[in-house]
Amino acid sequence: MIFNKGKGKIKMRKIRKLLTVFAAFFLVLGLTTNVQAEADQNQGTSAKTRGSITIQNTLEGKTYTIYRMLDLESYKKPADQTDKGAYSYKVLPAWKGFLESGVGAQFFELKEQDYVVVHPNAQVTAEGQFVNGKILTDAALQYAKEHNIHATQHATAQGNTLTFSDLDLGYYLVDSDAGALCALGTTDNNNVTIKEKNGIPTLEKQVQEKPDNSWGNKNDANIGDTVNFKATITTAAGAMNYKLIDKMEAGLTLKSDSIAVKIDETIHQAGANRFTITSTTDRGFEIKFADTWIQSLPVGTTIVVEYQATLNENAVIAGNGNKNSANLQYGDKTESFFETGEKETHTYTWPIGIYKYTQNGEEPEATETALADAEFYLSTNKTSAGTTEEEVQNGADVIKFKPTTASEGTIPTYQKASGEGTVSIIKTDATGKFILQGLDAGTYYLHEFAAPDGFNKLAGPIKVVITHEALTTPGSNLGYTVESTVDVDATDNFENATDDIKHENTNIAVKVLNTTGALLPSTGGMGTTLLYTIGAGLIVISGILLITKKRMSHE
Image 1 (cartoon, one colour):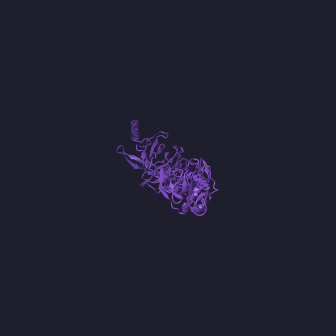
Image 2 (cartoon, helix red, strand yellow; image 1 turned 90 degrees about the vertical axis):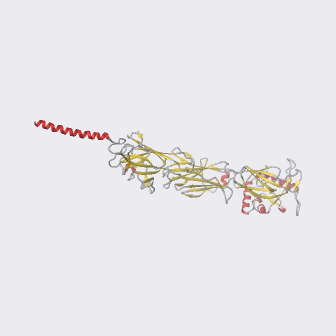
Image 3 (cartoon, helix red, strand yellow; image 1 turned 60 degrees about the horizontal axis):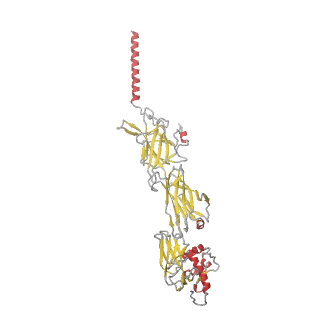
């Protein structure tokens, strides 16, 4: 039944036809909610009972808000499946402007005394949906925000179902932090059930480990190396305003020209209709994705953002590594947002320490004395780089270093570097010690270029291997191990240089024992002394025999 008020009468048949289409749109699209009063199916009602809206498949932690747009003044429920019933709606004052001159005027027509029907030019499908329903939904939400329309109710989902109760009957706009709801179904007994179709996008952050090029949450690198990163976004239904925020710690320098956005290995160029890089520094970047582009992609599309950074001279050595984090913000709110939370990777670089010494006395009472003026260089090749300083400095596999202001106590520290001012050959001071840092995990060879005066140079290089434990907690202080063995005869016959060559989590790991009088590994001892004694004795005996022979010849 349609209540006639004021001037003129509206024909029941025409209004019933228009409102039937109108009701179908709202039931399917989900712009508002038709809450039907419990009454006899063949009787009209003034619609003064209360109703409720239940949202299924809610996203836990997300806030849902409902706005009552139209008042259901009276209605007649369908008598059977062929009868669509009749409903009388009036626009609420706060929404009148939206239906008069806003986007709503393209879809609805206001009649006398604020009654509402579907606009005759609005395109409606056979299923009762507006062809451009999302335009209407988005515009209604924007109108509510711009005109500060008070929400009827709002609540935060604690599980997968949320119910709004004790509602005036009418049509309701349903919104959530993840996006406007665009589908609903109807149940009887004054309750309408809406199915949440919005989802939560996901983010995965990875770094590439060399040399196997695997991807994970950590890697090792030399200072100066280029490190490859990627952030993978999986899109979800409904979510809007995607923004990827990437941050790097001081030990990583972004290569801003390396940023590439890919879908199925196809690179997409930046642009207002796709995405924009809103800020770029050497410490990170932000990418804002256009809603129209995200919504044009199938739900579940993976967007891969690849980029590179250099591990620089400010890198943290060992410890917690050098963090790169990414976070994805999203939501349909401009004043607030949801986020996936930071996803982290950590890039580690390692030190090794050298200790050159000689041993005084015999075990177990032997003591150690540091040796100055021993010269070493580190290489990735066990073969000697040459016999001159120039040959070593220009060696392709020889690692270059620069002295740093950092030190372990009074131990000179050198950091991997390139360019001017680098050195390859490092000489021990009175401590006999130095530290080489900024190294990737792996195998190296420590070559002795020159021994101190009176001492013998090593016969072959010392093999040094840096390993570390598995990373179980992102950003943890990762334990590492350095082990060394010496090539005792320069034929790849590596044996322990000393009994104390395994090192864990402290820098002095490689102990290099030097001796006098013989080439390593011999220590030169009683055998050599005995030869000297026998030789001297033979000289004395020869002299005595010579003198005796001369005397006998004179006689």
